[in-house]
Image (tube, rainbow, N blue to C red; front, side, top):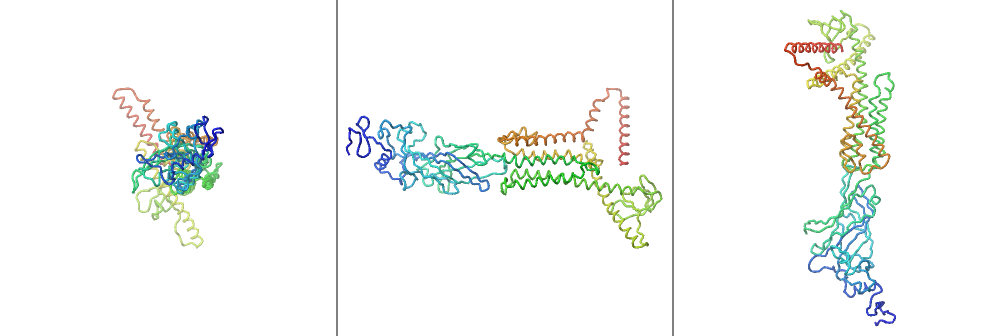
Amino acid sequence: GRCDRTAGNCPDGRRLDANGSKVIYQSKYRFFRDLLDNSMYDSDEPPFRLGPPLRVQVGLKLTKAQLDIISGQLDMSFWFRLAWLDHRLSFNGTEAFGSLWNPARDYIQTDVVNGHSTTNIWVPDISCLNALEPENFREEGAWIYDAAYSNITGSAHQHNVFYSRPGNLKSWCKIDLSLFPFDHQECTVTFASWIHSPSELIPVLLENPIEIHDKTGGIVGYTLVKVSSSETSQDYVTAAGWPEVSFTLSLRRQQESYMVNVIGPLSTLVLLANLVFWLPLREGSLGIGERISYAVTLFLTIIALALFTSGLRPAVAESIWLDRYQTRCILLTVAPIIETVLLFYVTNVINDCMIYIKMHNECNKGDRVRVRSNTLEDWQSGEVTGVNPVRVLVDGAKRACRWNHISHLHEDRSRGSMANAAIDTQMALQLSEAFKYDELAFVHKAFSRVDRCFRLCGFTTHLARWLHPCDVDRIGRHVYPIFAFALLNGLYSEIPAEFWDATVGAFLGGAGLAGGANVASLQHKTFIVIFVLQALIAYFAVIVLAITFFGRPVKKLFRWISSAPPESSGKENAAVVQSQTGAENADADVENLESDAA
């Protein structure tokens, strides 16, 4: 129809421009409908031309993500962005809408787009290749720009259609929980065209392909470190070099709750287990009855802690760091219980053996007794020829010897049944004590040989002399913290550098966690003090053991260096050597006498 030049209006809803010489649109929707009609637009027909393939730009705006570490499922909420060039939708915005049109800001929005024949325009079929379920996107309108838009923005790939729609996507992610809860996960989401070959369509990245709505609050249990993107290709049986676009999410676990609820309490219980070795073993001492109960209480506490915090650990088949740490802490609380029980047993054996040896000394010269070297031999009769120590001359032997087992009982069955029963009971008790004595003698002999081997290597040890439980407990008191520190420090060194300060951790064990990424709470820093105390106790134990085992050789070495005689004549050197040899022989005689007395 004809336009009214006076009013500036036209019958089809358009109007004249300010000069009255040109008809322009007032409605973007009316212009878009005419654009589709004039170009005979078909949404089933892709906008492909002869020559280079169509490049479809892909991008994401991540709003929320949740990772299920058991099933390996990544649930993402994001805006899926596509941009491409459709020559059939090309137009000049200034000619269509007049001078008020701004190519850098204005666009035409369609009603509904979906990429199939049921919608207004064609949309590329870019799909997620590792999706567990079909994508769930909400239908939104596309933005159509005029021909001058790409020249203004300076984009590497020209486009006049921009399509962004929100949706949810569930994709598969390969999970590595070997370092849980200090794990770092990387989940990749890959997009590609499902139908069109590389000769027709190639997905590429947007100029700004990734936008993150919230780096901390949008991902449950993790901190989003970064999101990287890449353009790759994949070879298939039916096609080679199929182009893809990948987005990789780097996630770091927020381990604060695990530090406060699991690792910190476990390390505290291990530190308290050191105190078991400081409780007395001697009967009548204050606190002897509390030693075994205290050690068992620590063990039951760590078991209860493992049960209460089982929900924080993933139920997976592979070995995870937290399970290995918990297992070692349980072993470190079991060790004091085993040591205490063994020392109590050895203490009782020693006390029984002392009574047994005292019975041996209750012999007079000329008494008839039975003797044997160990409980596996038969009894031999003989006569006591000396006391302190007791020596017995066995019938038929030429020389009197010392024997391990001496009995005054003789199987005289001529008396009544009550007397015979008393003899049998006493012989059974004596046999039980004899077995204990053999055990003690065997252990003493083994320790003596170990001492001899150490002396051949240049070290001075007195394991046979320290067989007493109190001395063994004194050694265990210093060995345990070293063993605990080394056992747990091996696990701490496995923690990645983003959670762990290797320089501090090499000397202070778990205190290296102070250099981690999520050290913020006061509770976390309080547990760092526990780690430092454990390390200091271990270093103190190293110093004590070094003085105990190497103090005497080092002292002799310094004494020899400080008292080295000046150069003298040959006679003086010979006299010095002779005097030193005599002193050493005298020392050796004294040591032999002391060992015999023991």
